[in-house]
Amino acid sequence: MTPLLLPNEILSMSAQAARLLVESGDGDGALLYLALLECGGDQAKASARLRWEDGRLRPAWQRLAGMGLAQPQEDAPPPPPPRDDRPPEYTRGDVAAALEGEPEFQGLCRELEGMLGRVFTDNDLRCAYTIYDHLGLPPEVIIQLTGWAIRRERLAKNSPAACPRMPAIQRTAFQWKRLGLDTLERAEDYLRRQEAVDGREWAILQAVGVTERRPAVEKEREYIAAWVGMGLSDELIRMAYERTVFQKNAMNWPYMNKILTSWHGAGYQTPQQVEAGDKPPRRTAAPIAARPRDFQPSRERIEKNNDWLDKFLEEQQKGGG
Image (cartoon, rainbow, N blue to C red):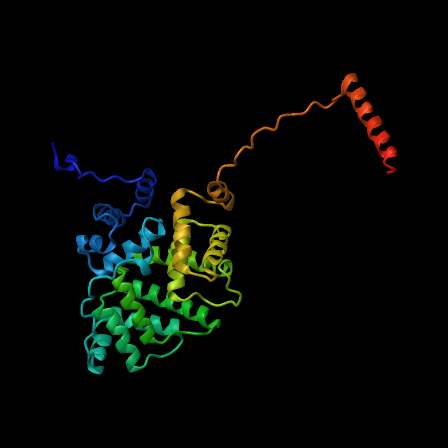
């Protein structure tokens, strides 16, 4: 007998969870889900059990949350303490030597200058070299990252000419590195998912009661990304919002997320399915005995009533009434 078949050593998952994991093709997400099952749903224990670095753990949590099999990033356990990511203090000479001796870096800087519409300062060049040398991101990934940062900046400022500064792009590069987005394939997959969120962000904000157009803040966007990943419709999200406000008297993102996650786990895709699933079964009232429609009193009863009425009128006359 193998250890997997010993009493209390058997794990089980729903067929729906298994299908989601298999269809996603996400090995890290499947391992994280198994760790959660083994640890009885304790997220902190599951994270410690895997002993992954932040750059691997965070994306797995996000993808698992997108499938509705875990809470989104805000509710996930804190990641392990980050490594010391402080970049080295590159000098002007270091950057100048790189521009002369590394044609790939020189070409990257020219490409970024064209994208951002300005000639780089010494500080801009140091930021670019930090991303290229210290983080070790490939040039094609850095170009994808810069394009993404430009789009986000223009959306946030509602200006087609807005461009982020290089220090902001450097901060985004550190985030991508922590997320493990260090290859072109991973970067493109991440951007596809982000574009899907972009396409629905404003519609979902409207569904949760936002009336003035604005971009979602970071935590709101994490929830929106998870709901888009679950394939939830705007109508279903609006329904969850109305129930959240009814219960909490205000918008509450974590509470609303629990509603949507439970609906997704139950397989509900439309408000009609939720209504049908939430409504208790109707009670059938006991049938009322039908009365005869054509009730006719007997002749004996009619004569008896007439005698009673004659007697009543006679007593009324005697009494003067």
